[in-house]
Length: 128
Length: 128
DNA sequence: GCCAGTCACTTGCATTTTACAAGTTACTTT
DNA sequence: AAAGTAACTTGTAAAATGCAAGTGACTGGC
Image 1 (cartoon, rainbow over the protein chains, first blue to last red):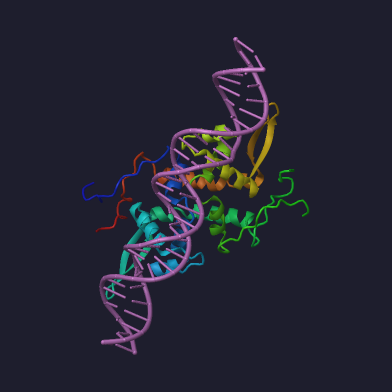
Image 2 (image 1 turned 180 degrees about the vertical axis):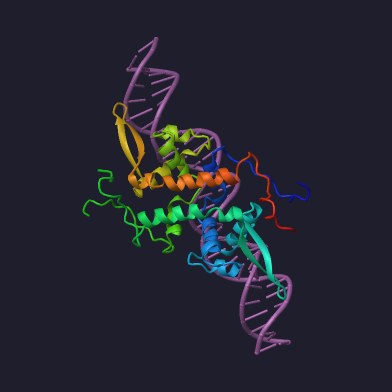
């Protein structure tokens, strides 16, 4: 326990594991970074920021810091001269894979088709 | 296709199913509402707002509108005099169950223990 | 009829987060 | 020395969030 980082503790807003998880990955960007680290071989700041969704650089930097602080991502040099760092998932980060697969599957089944037109499957519409 | 609602279309920021899903459920609150509708028998505005995480009422109202617009939730009267409405998941909403289970499982495995202390599993720490 | 109470929201406003553009630092290549 | 590249940081405007208070429809008791 000695040598712990100075970082502040975080008080969760509830006991619920879902709520807790969402406090960490419940935003529009974090899981996309995890996706790129997990499946798309993107491990540098540059590579991550060039993804199709065009994450703003300040958000990317902040999210990477957070993921590192929570132990989902590791930052390590992959060369000196010039010194450059790469980002990799830890075991804890890699454990998000089934979650990512589920999100992907749901989106694929329910949000496909380019532009969304607001009407559920037949029989599910509000008969206003 | 006649009788479609006037609602605006939505242009997704990328083709990725994960990204698309996150544009809908990628925030701190939406999946908690789905959780309550799916598992906790909460179907009224009142019941939903009384959950442990204390969602602000304006956010709850806005999220319910969004979920309805996207066909994940249905709003229907459960009594007249006074007229009251209940919220229920549609099939599309219920299809989020495996996703919710995965989030719960990850959180349970990696975020348990009340206050978070920032250090990954042994061997995963940045040896700074 | 009048008053208190409940439910389901809406409104106003302060705070926080996000988005976009531009700038900075360190180092390399020409 | 000049130009280029990677990895950020900073500034600022726009949007989302959080909190408190207010509103409207109705009900039930006196």
